[in-house]
Amino acid sequence: MIDTFNWLLIEWLNPIVAWFYPFCDWILLWTAKLGGIGGIVLIGVLTGLGVNIFQKFCSDQRLLGKCKADLDKLKVVIKEAKKAGDQDRVTRAMNVSKRVSSKSVWASIKPALWTVPPVVVIAMWAGSRLGFEPVKPNQEVHLIACFENEARGHAALIAPEGVEVVDAPVSPIEKYADNEKEKKEREEQQARATAANNSRGIFSLWKPWTWFNPQPLPERGMEAHWTVRATRPGIHQLVFRYPTEGGFATERIEFPVTEGPGRPPEAFNLLVFDTPTLDHMQTLQFCIPESMPVAWWNLWFTWMGLYCLVAIACGVGSRYLLRVN
Image 1 (cartoon, rainbow, N blue to C red):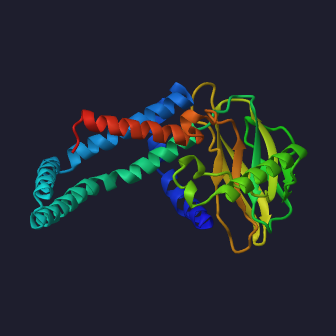
Image 2 (image 1 turned 180 degrees about the vertical axis):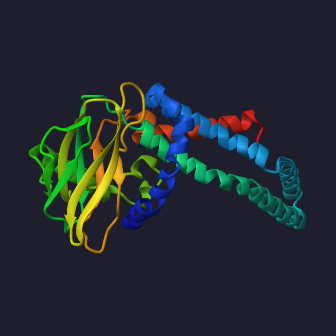
Image 3 (image 1 turned 60 degrees about the vertical axis):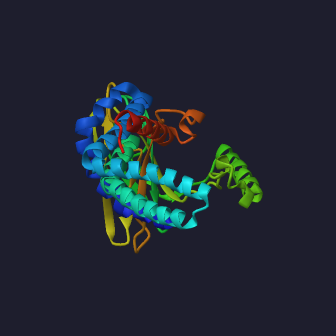
């Protein structure tokens, strides 16, 4: 199930959504001036408000209002019929109520479906642009390239003018070995996951805080590493070359650097899910700090948790303020 989701994300969803990022940058990148937390809060507010404005003016509010009024009247009729013991009247009223409810739900869902794709695009854009801190000139950034299991040899990083490779530009592609600290963290995570799985049962379903119990950390595979430093701001293009069964492959990744608030690099660049030869670069990661800590006020999901909380709260609140049926 997880592999299927990752395949859909890497091969389909991410390439489609990323096509809209330049347009989102044009209309929303100014929110980065508020910082990661402020920007995410504002995007959440705009999302909740925008969905309700669309629903208000793009749905049949007159029909929805009449359905709501009819359902309120039917509730009274059903209550009075039950009190009088008139089962036939209760049955007729409930059948009418079901038909009115179905019409109301369908009239409400049709316009709401149009808001799903834009919300997905905006949410993913917010994570990419506001979920991480931008890179400053002369800041050292560590890069991790993850390869498929059959990758071998060396990978080269060709840096443009204005970017320095702090260590060697050619890195061996080899299986990553945990250091002592990482090994200890992996063992502790494994112990927590085992304890959580042993205590999980049907009676824990009513405890929402147990739904996302910790999972064992997956072992890291074939990787290549570099450290780079940009000497001046701009959108630099890093070129990576590495050997494959069919020759050499090349990947080009943007590396934006800014003096102040602005766009960070794409922290996780998803390239391919798998290939027939199993020897390609799958991801390139920029090791840059997130814009907010893991905390209770973002449901321990950093930017995604904060975005969902604000969008839902603003959506519910603006629905009443705008009197959306």
